Length: 458
Ligand SMILES: Nc1nc2c(ncn2[C@@H]2O[C@H](COP(=O)(O)OP(=O)(O)OP(=O)(O)O)[C@@H](O)[C@H]2O)c(=O)[nH]1
Ligand SMILES: [Mg+2]
Image (cartoon, rainbow, N blue to C red; front, side, top):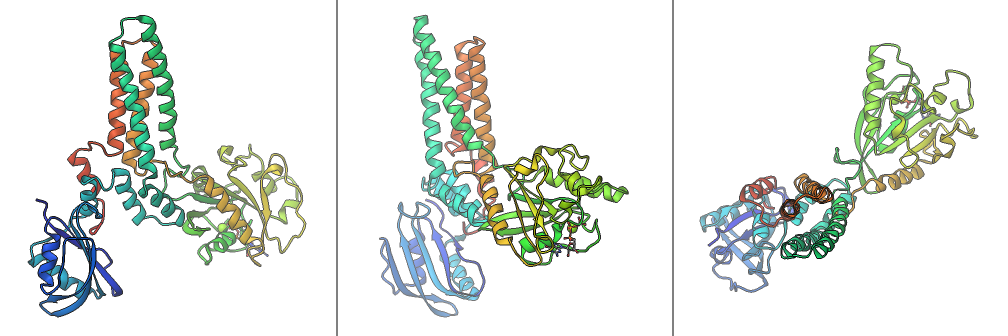
């Protein structure tokens, strides 16, 4: 018999409504003790009742979902009542007296997993969804929760199972020609499975950091900080007409078209005159190396002057010492933003190769072009987002990578003429890593580790 657990399903703050979840073999019986006058049957229903609490009675609705068709796969009751934290606390105490206990973090989701209602990808998507910070993340994790990743995972498991089955067959073959045909078939299947595996780990460019990062770089005084503030919608970075105002990079979360991005303002690029300016340039280089989208900000007015030492043109040369590494300046993730359009209506052409880069001119002072800039950044950011079939957690990603390595080894051992048993063992290791990634046969320790990260009530 499973213990009956309960937890608030809504935050403990004053609100119109609150909900408490109760789950376990005795869930319906225990809730019945709180409202002895109500007729509560063990069938899917919504019952209006009054809960008898030591402080008095309170109206409530009971949403009853018997096993197995409930969120946890067990008998479940959701108690909906007025959203007073004191009232919720009083009901939790009564539930405790009636024989249930407070749920551990993630215990509802763990039970849902153990009862086959959710698989591990979906359970991990629940957690990712709760902590997601943008609409785009929320859309992706909802799709995972809806089974998009699980279905792909299941296809992969079947692919690898039939791959391994090829070997079991080959052990029974005497004829060399038939065995060779099987091995060739194995190689084709392994390559297809590898392509499939790589799609799961196709890391979004921003794999190292939670949000895609949009970094503003460019010569000192170009108007980066002013533009940063305009994109953010508030005065966060210091602005002045003195070149070299920004020293440390300034990082803030901005919402661009429903996507939460990390917006980064950097120190202007100029020949460093002292140690502090050297550090500032180093920090700019670090930020641009990890950028998903680079906004190369240049002053429209300064574009006209092509005299030697013009920092704008220095920044527009790949081999300029101002760029430690120009490889981040590819035209699929760099947008050239000419600022101060209000001061300079006509912009002169940019030198090679930047004349072919996407560009637009804006004025952060009058807000001209800012809306278009936001939508151009959003399109660039979308290209760096993970598809729905990308691994949902670091745990799952590591196991998929492990499976891909084992399978690659299997193919190269096969090419080297290794004994068939060696190749078979490697294919089996790939299969077991993939099964674990998608939650088949995960050990109790692994499950405890995963679900302990959830909040109480999930
Ligand atoms: N007229 C006009 N002035 C602007 C515009 N954008 C920035 N400025 C002015 O340009 C000067 C430099 O702006 P900042 O935003 O501090 O430039 P920055 O690129 O961050 O400079 P550093 O931090 O020194 O690299 C300030 O005096 C701003 O008011 C604009 O669109 N129009
Ligand atoms: Mg600045």
